[in-house]
Structures are given as C-alpha cells and as structure tokens.
Image (cartoon, rainbow, N blue to C red; front, side, top):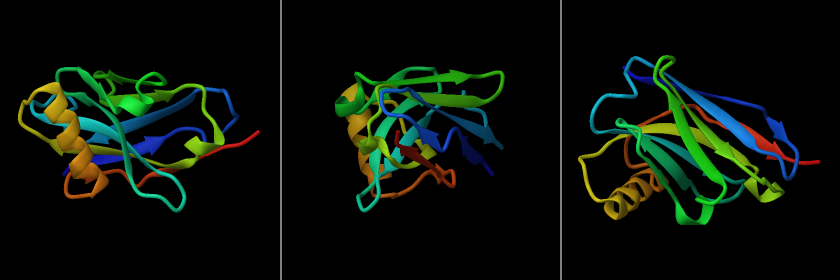
Length: 136
C-alpha cells in the first residue's frame, strides 16, 4: 500500500520560497498513469489543487499559481518536491501531497480532472498534511 509523507519547514517568511518534499513508499513515482500532486487548504477555506508531476516527469499547474510554482522529482529517492516562490501570508495552509491514477489525456483535461478529483477528495492516496505558516 502506497504511503506519502510531506516534509518541510513549518514557518516561512514573506517573500521567501517555500519548499516541501513528499516521500513515497510502497509504490514508484515512475509507475505509468499515476500523477503526483500538491494540494493545499488555507484556514477556513476549501481544498486547492496546486499542481502535479506525472509518471513520465511532465508537470501541470493551476493557472493562478503557475508563475510562482515549480514541481520536480528525484526518482532515486522516490520523492517529489514543490517550490512556491514569493510567498505571502495568504499562502498559509495545510499542504498535502497525493497520488491519483488517471489515464492519459490532453493537458487541459488532465488539469480539470485532477482539480475535480482532489478538491472534492474523491479519490487518490493522500499524505497526512503539513502546516505551513507564512509570517515575518
């Protein structure tokens, strides 16, 4: 059974870059048709899909965060990483990594599908989440 574990700093200062790592066990991040995602939930708000990296290493981002986000992976460590630049207090949230099985589709449909599945928590395997606070 796959397990995902987020790690990273709990406190980040405004304007800095947030870096989070998801360590995966019980399954390879290169297995075909699996997408490895980052999702966050600000206090008092719903889940927001941020982006994903596919089994082949292709990346996808939600448009509103694309200019500040970067997702990468280290296949030797079976990890994938989120970097979010120029953070503000509005980036304070619980950050989750999650795995979703999805057949190959166009980029637009992939983004829409991942957004729908993960913001409604309608499937996938999730990490427990990690709190990140952006504060001076």
